Amino acid sequence: MRVELAEVFGFCPGVRRAVEMVERYLAENGRLSTLGAIVHNAQVVEELAQKGARVVESLAEVRDGAVAITAHGAGPEVFQEIQRRGLFLVDTTCPIVRRAQEAAREFAEEGFFVLIYGEEAHPEVRGLLSWTRGHGKATLNPSEVQEIEGERLALISQTTKGRAEFWSFVANVVARLGSRLREVRALDTTCPETGRRYQAVQNLAEKVEALVVVGSRNSANTRKLAEVARHTGLPTFHIERAEELRPEWFHGISRVGVTAGASTPDHLVAEVVARLEKLGGDS
Ligand code: SF4
Image 1: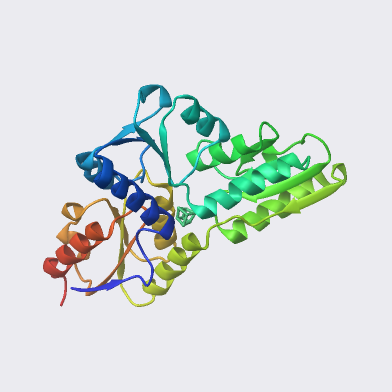
Image 2: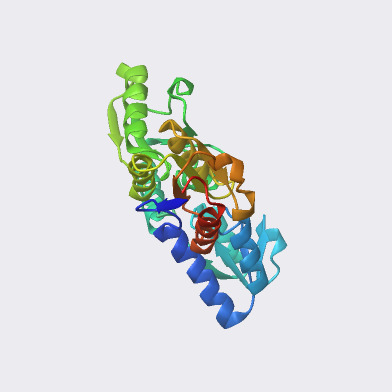
């Protein structure tokens, strides 16, 4: 079976940078704790664990040594607590997330109520919300925005949301709140990397008969990528590792496309490609 790769797939620059920073620290110092998984990918977490990284859910679990903040970033109270506990900080916050955090902080300091287009429970969004210091809210649903504090509204986005979705959310919220607003500012803080991966899978769909999306089921960006792949109308298989591939999925198929979420390492994709090539199919 012929395997085609998407033009852009796998680790985005922010995740690659985070993993490299942690690996570099581990190579020099032997161990560190990461506040949450550094990447939403079980295999990568396992590989880092073997090199000395321990995932913790709270700073209370870290008695000494170093702690890494993930590419999703964290709120100001987390940085203060790290300092208070005398821990060494390895801050892998993605520069694009950092810009969104700065926007959240600056808008709030200027007296705007900050509305974040994003999933409230997502670690990046929880961090963004913290930077508003209580003057913000996160939602994906414009109808949940009945009223805001004051008359000045600023809107930003979770970085992994689509640009078009964000602007439609902005338009919807502004239409709902209408005359209650005196001033509105909206800043597109979405990350172009996510859109590039979606576009690449759509381009790939024109050349193949089925799509395989590689990445963790608990990774929001991989799940969304799989959704975009399914929307192309082609049979789509979301798998975490090569062993999950079933020969019967590819009966009658001679060309298959492969892509991977932003938290999927290159070697997992290479294993999937190698297995697909061996599976055969129709050619
Ligand atoms: S998807 Fe974009 S914002 Fe998120 S970590 Fe990657 S580069 Fe940074």
